[in-house]
Length: 109
Image (cartoon, rainbow, N blue to C red; front, side, top):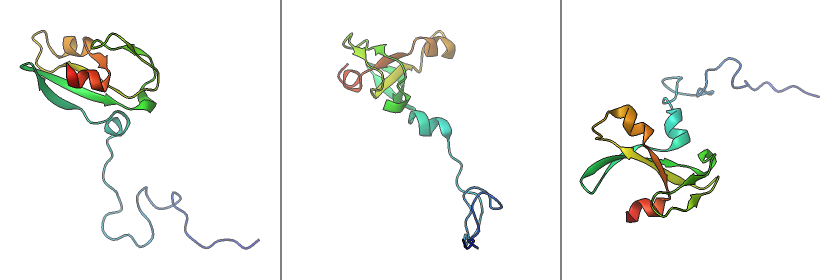
């Protein structure tokens, strides 16, 4: 069987580099948390600041109870996690009090 003379990626070239690449051999840095968990954003609801983090279906590894409708968010269903961004007790207390919401329930509440 004849062998291939093509250079193989990964042996000698850094990740993101390929034959004929111009300029830098490194691609843009990827934020793993953003890729896995979505983009954290801040929203204002009823005069309070909230951090809102979308959770993808592949990252939804446990069932949760939605505080908006009191129904279960099943395993594997995309949803949101929300916690206070301007709480009085500090960042640790705000993160400890985060809640998982159905996307629709978060919008209507």
